[in-house]
Length: 47
View 1 (spheres, rainbow, N blue to C red):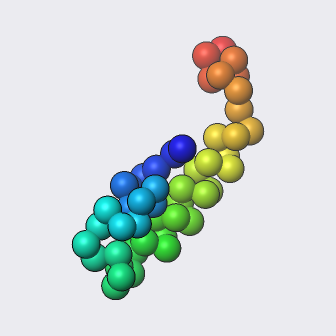
View 2: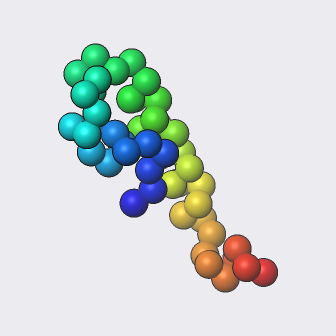
View 3: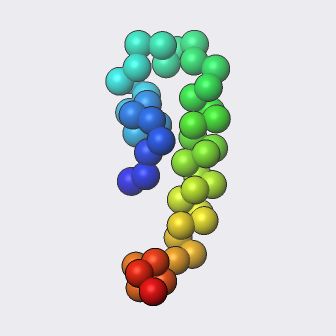
């Protein structure tokens, strides 16, 4: 899985997770990038 930050994969890995204001932004960014990259195959990237 794609992760911009470890807390996106495992929220409990961060001691600030209960009051983190940027976590939702990391999740949104991950979703946007993943969606964009899913449009391409490995073949597309190497050509």
